[in-house]
Image (cartoon, rainbow, N blue to C red; front, top):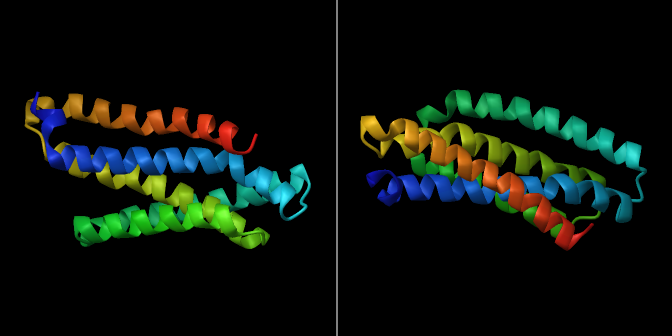
Length: 157
């Protein structure tokens, strides 16, 4: 099937899988880091993460509404940069605002990738294969949701 052989499809789905796995890992790791590194209570960590994630969702709405104005490469640069900084924040930061920026950037990168890269993935396949391409793309995004908690439990929990 040409759907999964297309380099454009593979690039879009692998990027989305990686950013999804990163987000779903940090979703569980960041609260623990806020508790252990910043000495926050569980309630404070949960509230802080909630606020960061709501703001990230709003940022994603804004970014995805203008992403079509940028080249595919520039969109991917933004996504990779956000995902990378999110992971680096979780590794090196102990200040709460930096840890919370990690979950902000991880959610922003993963959901923005889901919204923008599905277009790139499906553009690479024939019309009759688009439903299959969308299904495979979504499956790989959700696979990141399965990998992330497994990584989190191995790393922190």
